[in-house]
Length: 273
Image (tube, rainbow, N blue to C red):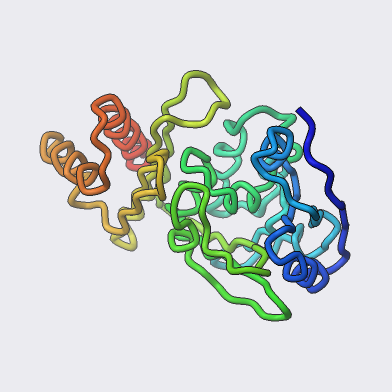
């Protein structure tokens, strides 16, 4: 199928993009890599009258190398991250996440910010940014506000952006020396969306064990203190995880088994020396 007709505009500044989005009054959509919106347009699941291309706006492709965090513009592509071009020092693991997302042609166009805004529960960046406790920098009408990543995702395909707001960048904290990171997804073949997903950060020096269960058909299950789930007693661990899945209405037996396995393997990766 072909999309319904639309106007295509390329603003040069965030202010212009926000203004166009507000003027669209619900009939305009912003676009970068178009890897998610493109198929929706072709199937006419989305029929905006105006598409606002963000890729020509310098602020959205910037990289800011801070001491404790890296700020990544929303239009930075997954391929850029895969190629190890982010400043390392605690964020090298992001290249590993990137290279297992879809296929290179998709990664060349798809952006971290676009994936996060699309809020597909099975998307790798959604769970990754939540387990890192990243912060979203949102722009509208000359003002910025910040939203924690796990508060930005409201549910499946639903985010916290208000009308006229654009995700400008994502600030990702660095892992400290000695911290471990684990990420495991269950999927039919490499590159596909996950049917179950676990992500864990283990930072003994800060007494931190943070976990995320993704691919839940809703918002990720974020566990800021996962010590009760990921203790040494394997039977207690599984009982606690299953209770957490119950509280989040994950009742399908296969899904529960896959989520337990994904989180357990991510945990083992994170604590391995």
